[in-house]
Length: 205
Ligand SMILES: C[S@@+](CC[C@H](N)C(=O)[O-])C[C@H]1O[C@@H](n2cnc3c(N)ncnc32)[C@H](O)[C@@H]1O
Ligand SMILES: Nc1nc2[nH]cc(C(=O)O)c2c(=O)[nH]1
Ligand code: SF4
Ligand SMILES: [Mg+2]
Image 1: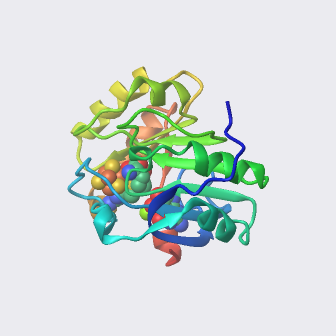
Image 2: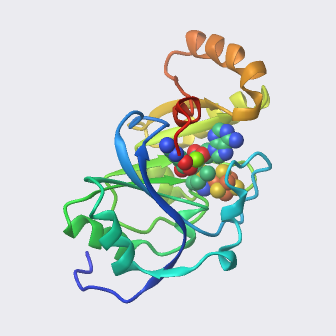
């Protein structure tokens, strides 16, 4: 049941910016990113470790986050940090009331909340996804840092719902070493597609 009332709830916000989605199924599409603070999953290669401690970022009223989002197109990507550490029902229902598409980037480590048009699940070994996110994910995006990550990716593909699109994305610092391996893997296992962090090549946020 969507809560239609305006809310005074707040969420910890690291940053919000209008850019081009760099990864996964929506690569190339203009999107307003809302990066919520807080994450305890602890990926050693995480490219946004500044987001981990929510106490270092302000808490902002959801009304205000939505008012800013409204100024920038019709597609929002909620990311973090780990966005599912927070209940996202109020934020996503308000965005939808404004006619904005709600996409999310998540590790799936917490129970699903919110009302979503698209969920990108990027599972992590340190804190596996909940069943609620395996069931709802629209795409599975597994990060390849070393060869063992292909095994982990196959295990995750077996757990996610069968409609989810499957992507392998090279960990940025390992791309010179692992991208050729990833390319061969996808040629041999064509149920997967490659996702690259195109925004880093384009030098945009
Ligand atoms: C920073 S995370 C935030 C959302 C959520 N915590 C998650 O991990 O899905 C956004 C996306 O960036 C990916 N990512 C983070 N660091 C990366 C890196 N060094 N190389 C490639 N992808 C990375 C994550 O796996 C995830 O798909
Ligand atoms: N351009 C751009 N695309 C992205 N896709 C997922 C991102 C994220 O950090 O969640 C991201 C990001 O930080 N920038
Ligand atoms: S789950 Fe996401 S935000 Fe958290 S450490 Fe891993 S990549 Fe970074
Ligand atoms: Mg990023």
